[in-house]
Amino acid sequence: MTELSSPTRRVEIEYCTQCRWLPRAAWLAQELLTTFETELTELALKPGKGGIFVVRVDDEVVWDRREQGFPEPTAVKQAVRDRVAPGKSLGHPDK
Image 1 (tube, rainbow, N blue to C red):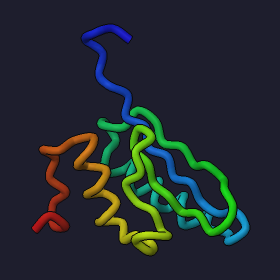
Image 2 (cartoon, one colour):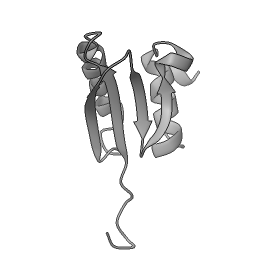
Image 3 (cartoon, helix red, strand yellow):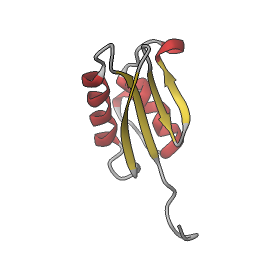
């Protein structure tokens, strides 16, 4: 990566396969990709076990179901926005 390259902005959603949370993870991924279509460089869905549902931005946990419960999309979008595009307006949810 050269000095002029934009930084990598990777989001990872780790979800529990035992709990069958893939549809929830995929829906949240779609929401994030639609909202941050130019800001994200990658979005990964990572199968896990044991009730996990964690959202990470560049390896930093921004949402953990065990601590915060299942996320509303607006809350996750705000957490992601704060790391990848702090000046970006999310429209109505920011009001």
